[in-house]
Length: 406
Image (cartoon, rainbow, N blue to C red; front, side, top):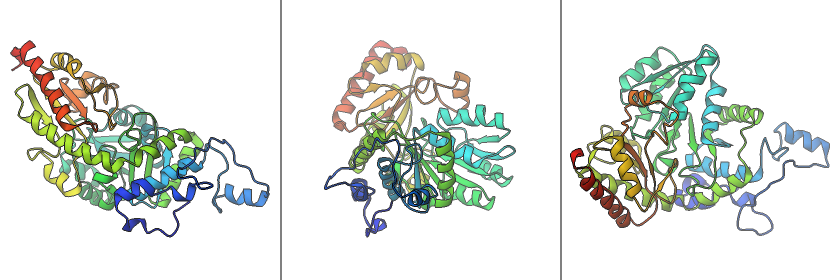
């Protein structure tokens, strides 16, 4: 169901996050979208029931297929991404799996980057080969190598930018041109950036995917995923999802919808805080390297500046002394959850070995350029001064306890 009489492409994103996808679903004067828990939806008119089942009329039949609360969430994300259609999944990984298994068949080839999220990387290295699907993973910032592999022929080009957890950036527009010359579908994981910082479809991508669990929901209380793109592609992905059953729960859809109403405010603060924290850490003697595309010395800063409105709320940094330093440092932090999540209103931190790439071995992480002493730090909406002071006191403890690391 689409919003009526509103030209959403002329409305600013901050207003879209509050209103898009909601007014058509309000009931009996309610100001909030209801949570519809019904598994099935009844019809007295058998012919109307049949038309709805065939998709000839709008409506709902069975909760594994569609649901009014879930549809409101899909419509909001569709609007923010500027897409023709969207379909939701139970998790971000379900959405990524759904895309790949919809678009790829035995004998096909997918070209991607080495720095994808650990779960995505496992699909490429462990699961797709079982179906005789070739995965070619290139050095993330080597665009010439990516273009060369794409030109050999492939069905899908899968990109993630910025990457998790080392915040590498790829040129979506450039690689989309190469992919389309080869007749491939371009998929971009936009979880770190969100539609407020980056709109991959406008840069030439065919599909954009989010782990809605992260920044979209923003409160670490609901799992979800969503895919946006053309009507034709999304319809095919929806069909895979409705049959395989990775359906978004209506209560989770409601929680993510509620969280998205403050998305523009949260992202504004998180962009600001992450940049300031990255600048502070870059000058600290206990920090080996800071990974954040907003820093001028980031290898892909110019690409990020071209295709992003803001650089995001996540940064990572490698401490001198490796994993032993990380063990000593993280417990000192007071205004942070040490947990495997990101994009929340609370600051969250942890090493990739227990978060983004826990599924990978140390050797696999090393091959991806992920140091064992890396800390992924997702800024929340706390006062920046308190976060900076918290980091300072934690690093001061390290300087006293581990002077040899300096």
